[in-house]
Structure formats: C-alpha cells, structure tokens
Amino acid sequence: MSVIKFGPGGLGSVKDAVKNLEIFHELGLRACEISFTYGPYIKKKEDAREIGKKAKELGIRLSIHAPYFVNLNSKDEKKIEASKKRILKCCEVASWLGAKRVVFHPGFYSGMKSDEAAVRIKEGIIEMIGYIKKEGWDVELCPEVMGKKNVFGSLSEVAGLVGDTGCGFCVDVAHVLARYGRYEFERIEKAFPRKKWHLHFSGIEYGEKGEKRHLLVEIEEWESILGWLRRLDKDVVLICESPDPVGDAVVGLRIWGGL
Image (tube, rainbow, N blue to C red; front, side, top):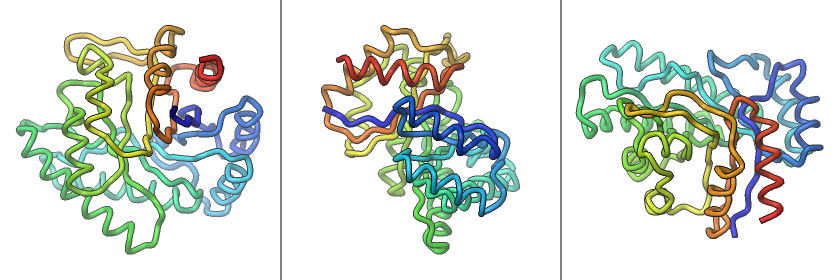
C-alpha cells in the first residue's frame, strides 16, 4: 500500500503562512505546494527560513509551483532564458524553505514536432540542473504532465525528460484524464516506475482539446484515484488543486483512512 502525504496547492500570504501551516497540520495534512503563479512572493530569506522551519517542525513536506508563464521551447530565445531564470529563482527560494521539489510547465510545441520540442526542453533542464548543483541547492526539477493536447507534456514526453536528464516529475492525474479521456493508471505506472511520486489531483472539465478548468473533487473521483494508489507501493505527495484545495484535500485524507 502506498504512503500518501495529502496537501493543498497554495499556502497563502507570507504573513499568514505559519498560521496556515498550523491549520493544515491540525487537519491532518502533511504536504503543501506553494504557488508562485506570477512569481516568487516570498522574497526575504529570513521569512522563507521561518516558514520552512515551521513546516519541518510540523512534518509538512513543502514544494513549489513555478510561474505558469514559463516556456522552455519558445521561438524567442529571450523568453527561454527568462523562463529558466524564473524557474531557478523558485529553486533558490525552495532552498531557503527546505522545499525539495519545484514543479513547472515544460513548454509549448511552438510549431515543432514532439521530438524537436523535447530536445530544446531537455537542454534547458540539463542546464538548470547544472546550475542547481553548482549552487548546492537540494532541489529537484519536476516538469508536469499537462492537460491540454496542444501543449508539450504528455505522459511519454515527461517520462522522456526524466529518462534523458534524471529530473523529477509531477503527474497531474486530472490532466491525464483531460488529455486522454481516461485516468490511464497503467500507463502512469509504466511511465514512472520510481518509488517516489509527486501527484496533483482535482476534478476537471475537459473537451476535445483537453483541459478547460479545474473543479471540486467528487467522492467517486477520490475513490477511484485512492483505490488505485492503495494497490501500489509508492511514497506519494498528493497535492489537491481544486477550487477548494484545503477542503478537498481533507476529504481525500478521510476517504483514504476509510479504505
């Protein structure tokens, strides 16, 4: 049976961060992904260290989601360089926090074939990994499986990046549903045989082009994914990205305890 740390996507403001971590702990949550949607809002090292110290004290595993507007396969080289800088800034803040993973959207096809886009994205990840090692940051880059079909980030594409660079990964199971029309549990297992998994989950609305928007998680959806994870032997961080990430994460935790 898998071991799961449940948590929300989102910590709240710097001012409220420690208090929110205490609330999460009281609710039984043991993970939290800090959303730097528009850039890192934790700017002072002392603030980050205080937050990280509290998270460690409470046994809460921290991760970071990098800004949404990064693209490692833009036709504009300046945008690629800016994207790498944004991701690496998140890695620096992660090192202050003691957060071990930085999740990011790998990029767009930009009119290229999948294998062509993969080469450029791979090169960017390898370069960033080199910088992370040089700085001595204990942080793993985790490209995310994406829910829109016109965006680089299929199961095989992300698995390819992992194999070629040694980076980590984030499987958004709702994105898998939106991209393929089903959860594809067996394909996820084959693509990512590692023991440690970083997952996102939510309800999702999707159409022919894939993801439209995240939704609250239905009980049946929780039962489906948790029943699958119960049959495996993985060390899982499961981040809920629904419109009510804390409330839905708690529901998932309670269902897990009752399975």
